[in-house]
Image (cartoon, rainbow, N blue to C red; front, side, top):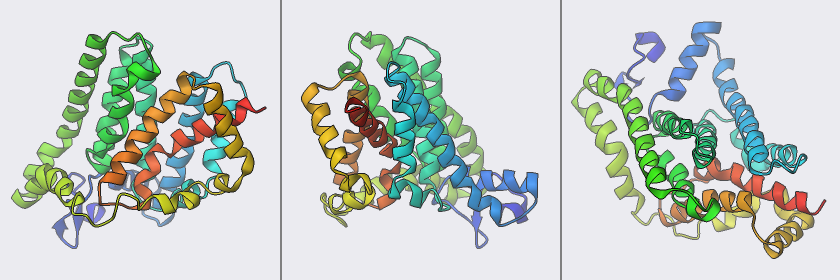
Length: 295
């Protein structure tokens, strides 16, 4: 309907403004149609392309976290690409693989900022904006925990500069997202404006604690999410060896990225299997580190 109406500011569904999701995925579809003409293959290709970009970003993260381990990056990519969970959702026209791509971009920004490069905070802000435009403020839940826990995985940071930079990154992300949201709110009308500024944030948070699914709901799904690695004995022995030998900076980074988000999504009762996709690369990186140590 965006294409038919020629309105690329406000998404429409059945003639009414569609407020359930921001427009990034829809913009990507429109961009492909503008280049290749209206077709059915481009929308199907978007998530595999973002999945491939995510594999490249994961490769880059592995090189930065463990520069002395030359084989580890390709192992991480193979683990991520070979996982049933990741592969399944890489073929769907949904929002979470795209969101995972922006989270990975934000993780590169976090590492840049931790290395003292101010551009890292700008990259975090850009990733926040792209994530908000893809699926709303939930990207903050994926990026902020690892940044706040930087004192654990990257000791020695100047905390005044670090927290100030994070605040500026959040403000930059909000400003970039508002550059769409404010004109879209005026164009879409009062109901649409109230939905994107209030209904998709506060109301969703309230409804998420409506006790629809228990805190344990993700646990029975983990064997499927981690398949085939879950049933590989060497994977478990490698993880035990990593814990026994001690966690290095990269392993702590992955845990700070993965565990707080898993706990938060377990406590929020609104659950879907694909909600965990954006931190799944952290699992692949951690598994690759464990397996690399075993030779």
